[in-house]
Length: 244
Image (tube, helix red, strand yellow):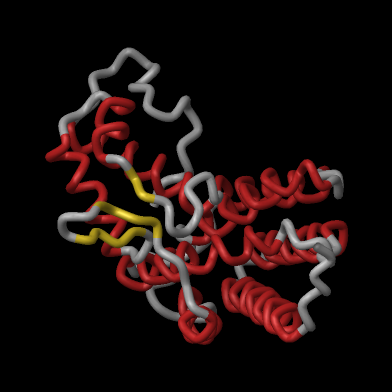
């Protein structure tokens, strides 16, 4: 499971090595997934095959294969004869996905767990440091969303059970847009959200350095559960009055 695209989107390899068709396809898929999850492409937006093919310098056939993989993840919906659209989640579907995410959180510690390597511990430590250093400024909402996504992707290295980790990642990507959208809510205390995540990241680091994957998984489960509860609480608040 790769990290989100870090080089310029649409650009080819920068190390002088030739890029295989599969590498190019994976890179484009990551770029489009990233745009959807970060709400650069909001729910309902139609994705132009012609524009994307031109941007990435490929024909429509390999682009359609990329879009088909994104459709399998539930991020886009291809309507025959109409086009491909970014999907949205109804409240009941979101709730069911969160219930499943919470139930699965503990499994990486029990199904084919990987003893955390020094390199992985350093990666989580770097994520914790990023969280601690992030100012609680509204302009940093996107940086915070990126940090959460990087943290989830890093957790994909905690188990060698590929079906489990693929499902875990898939479910997170389904809910990421809802959570990232909530960061823009006027009633959200961004400073509190960042502090909560920073504590989780630090506690997970401590557990991994001790080799206690069960504790690390339990900490993450608690965090996902609390995030879901905050979403439910926000949903139940009365809508602000229309001041038009």
